[in-house]
Length: 143
Image (cartoon, rainbow, N blue to C red; front, side):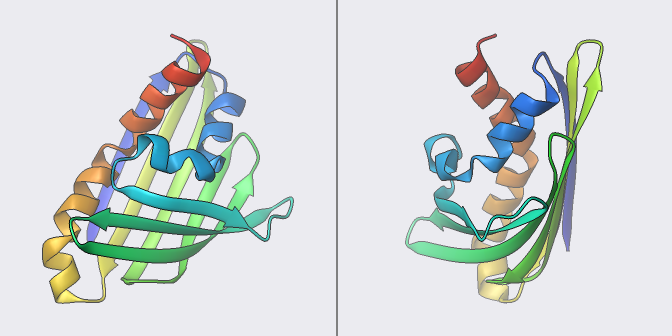
C-alpha cells in the first residue's frame, strides 16, 4: 500500500484553494496524468467523481464519493475502479500567510500488472499533487 502526505502554505484563501480542488473539470489542463475528470450528483455535503488517468497505452478510470466541508476539507473514498483501496483528503487551514494546504492519499491497485506499470507513475503524481495545485493557484489567482 502506498501512502503520501504533503503540505504547503500558499498566499491564497482557503476558499480559493478549495475551489481549485473541487473544479475537477479543469484537472486535465494541469495534471499531466489526468485525462478526464468530472463530478456529478452534487449535494451540499458531497459529490461523486469520475477520474481517468493515462500512461502510454494504459488508461484506467476510477470513481469516488467526495465528502465536503466547504472551504475546509474534502474526504475522498473509492467506490469503484482499478484500486483495491483508495482514500484521500485535502485540508485547507487559514494562516496569517494565507492557507496551509494538507493532502494525503493512501492506495493500492487490485492488479499486480497495473501496480507494476502505473503504480510508480500514480505514486509520483500523488507526491506532486500539492505542488500542482499550488502552481495552478498562481496561474489562476496570480502570485
